[in-house]
Length: 278
Ligand code: PAF
Image (cartoon, rainbow, N blue to C red; front, side):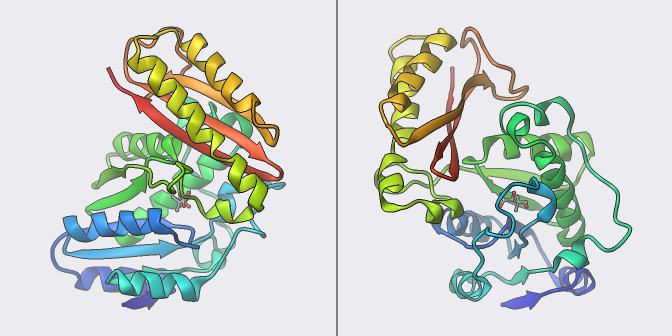
């Protein structure tokens, strides 16, 4: 497995790759969810490139950029075991040299849900993914459904800017009790970790109501909030039932709906979602 630190070296390595290239962009501190993306890429392509870059432009000034967990040696060992061809691990100065000032904005959908709470977050994500796609030139890039709005934004950017790659969305990988895998789960203390299962319970409540014929979005949001409020350590940021493409809140679920939530446990903010399909 090649470990590549500069854009020039990554482009040179990419030029040597024959056949289809799959790409898994990450911020490192890998878990099973990332490895499932890698395995999907390995299955569908001749080569797989992963990147590790804690992207400073997608963190707000009061967010956890400095505290974000990092362990590149452990990540390399995990990627090596998965037989990844190359890991691109640039420094911040390589990706954002002095004078860098060109940004990718994906419009209205970046202002809702996560975007409303984390202004500028999706501008950072869209910009870094555009740069990474230009550097790695993959045929396919793999993203987890866990970050549903990120997936919606990336698909829109790729479509709107006529980029030459396919975005493959991989189902969320969960712990045995239903908690979605996330690098940020390490921030939870044992009590918060136990409490965090309420996210999955709330999403399952929505799923059951929908399966039972409920299509009133307000009633579903209400039942989810009631479920979460039973957990004293949980502080709700938002509970949403929205159109999967525009991310506009729905009154009636008459098309595919993204049911998503963001909840804080102490200082840790977790997100999760499911899609209700017609
Ligand atoms: O999902 C992530 O880990 C990041 O947002 C991504 C896509 C690697 C961009 O920095």
